[in-house]
Length: 413
Length: 67
Image (cartoon, rainbow over all chains, first blue to last red; front, top):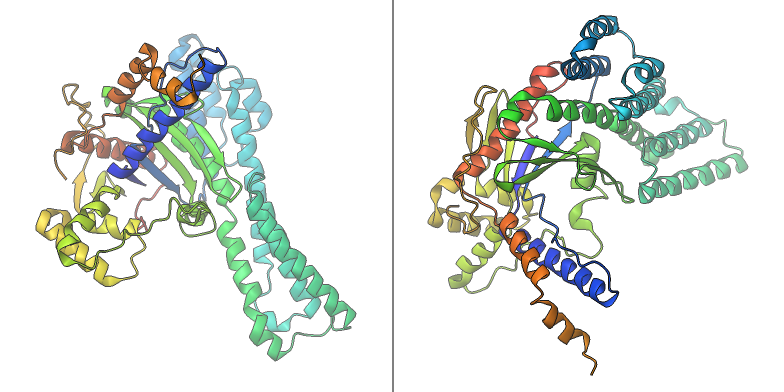
């Protein structure tokens, strides 16, 4: 899990954009004699966290913990049901999924979404299991396959990759479907040439032999992408809504549907968003992604800097030829740079150095650019070159001092 | 006499509702980058992480150096 603080440049751009949106709505409201909007949309992601889910191997444990927590919560609010709830808790069988009937009968009133969430877990788990079965039976040695078997396996892989995509990610599965179509055509040609029952020859193996291997690896990577997100969604929701330490810190989970939402983009960008309200009017968002989707959105087809309009390209400002202007150049980079921090486990948070932030955010191909930047930071504040660790514990719950004034004039770097 | 769109916009900028909306927006977006607030944000993240580790000990591991 890591977090980032929005850069100065991005914050001011977002402020300007939100004011522009407001002015447009204002103008339309006046022209159409409708109610004038009274609020400019605030910026919710000034502080944002990203949680990348691990591959979940023990979904039953997770579900039982979540259900047990929900039962405790019901018990707190309805003490008269305590004995009934204790009985229910003991009836949860860790070795198997609770049935949807059990969920409907016991939780539908207070937790109407739970049934849907668990149904999604069951569906995605089934999908992951089927994929695993396919992978277990996949050929270990491609050279023993016939042409027909080889292409059939490739087509099956593409079909699985489509099944493991989200319905909304049209660009993603259209791209895979095109590749599947090509493979079907190739298979057709092989059949026409009468080679379908022949074993693949050495030349073919040399040229195309690793295609199936690569596809199998891809299927294996994508196998749990939907299951992981659905399970982690249960876990994060459980922690955000029941954690006492968070409450003591003054953090509350926002139920505003415009802020707590699921993003399913056509390009395959998939994430769940949760929003936290904090003291002093601060808000923060948590973005949850499976590891597969994180990599897909960071380095793959859904990467931000690959957006068509190019506005969000993470390119460096052009370094001036005149060395005396380097400081201005580096200052500009600095203002456009988010600050990252990462949770390393056991209460440790690593605050990244400016140089690490620079490397993480920009695609620096030219080493001399990095060197120039390092020199600038060193002149500015040598501490920025080093990352550092801070440890917290669950008992350390002093809320944000309300006298801490919100202040946008960066008092320190 | 009809006013063009730009003139309308200029006039609207002085509208009390707009002025109020912008004032409130300025308050909630006047974010702090102070050390205290930053530390608090780290603490919130650590609390979520610790709680996830406590509740789901066999599931959550935050030792991935990719991030």
